[in-house]
Length: 294
Image 1 (tube, rainbow, N blue to C red):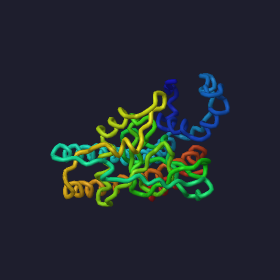
Image 2: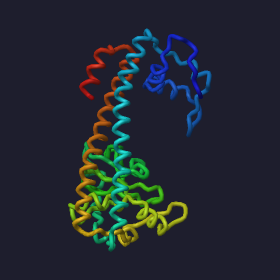
Image 3: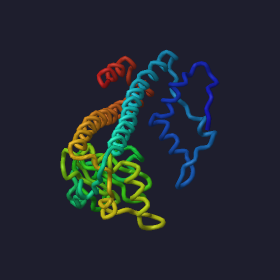
Image 4: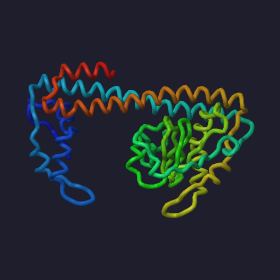
């Protein structure tokens, strides 16, 4: 639906936030029809009643929440541009390389399986749904305690390579220790000083395309460690590879800090939103919370 504002006592940005609030989401779920995909009628959509404080307060609420979203967007843009920068570095280094190395010469596949009975409360779980397409930074994950089957353990600095439908290009660095779906290959640099280089190589279009071309299966094609480890990548020499790796490690640290900040900012925003919309929290108090978060 496209919604146009017909009354002068409603601020457009305030309405945007009102429709993102938990009360509105609950209203939609309660009135939605259907089983697999809920559908909300136009009549029900327009019947939703929302609190309408004075315009000045509406605008202040929207500005407070918008400030958090603006910072989240800036951090997300940093991740995107950093991904492009690393790919450009790798392409430049690859173009000048005069030899090759196989992934097996650069990395190993740790196969440390872990059963649900060993999961701890704060253990992070990464499934294929959490790994972004063609971006090497992991920003989402879930709690391992909600998982009921055996998973693969990974360590901070490893690379996760989606082996199911590899053409989806799901390759990302791990910013923490955790467990992953068995549809993901955990790859670890043999030389810790080459972590960044390995990440760039595995996330490159050439490696992903080779895995996709050699994947097995029609409906659910998969690649394997045997296939991935045999792929040759341009090798600029140990000194050049380590130098580039050091640059990538520095970029990765900045991006991971920004994405961790995003999780904190999103949690702050999601906590403030219902309180501001209901009027239980004053804008002045919310502004202080936002100032401390930013």
